[in-house]
Amino acid sequence: LIWSAALITVVLWASVYLALKLSLEVFSPGEVAFLRSFSASIVLMAYAWMVGMPLPSGRQWLEVAIIGVVGFFFYPMS
Image (cartoon, rainbow, N blue to C red):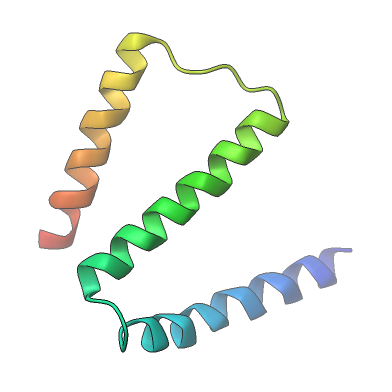
């Protein structure tokens, strides 16, 4: 089980570079970044829903929004 999980991780990780190269022929870098973030958000939201994770409170939404803005806009500049 551990070896199959490691193999799946390596294959998926390696395929990302090919997918990025091909997607940049069609989309701009900003669009690719948005699509990656959006698709990851959808997958994580589906997982949270499947395990019954509660929604964040109002203050937690604000904190998540601030972290998201800082991470999305300022991290690439570092």
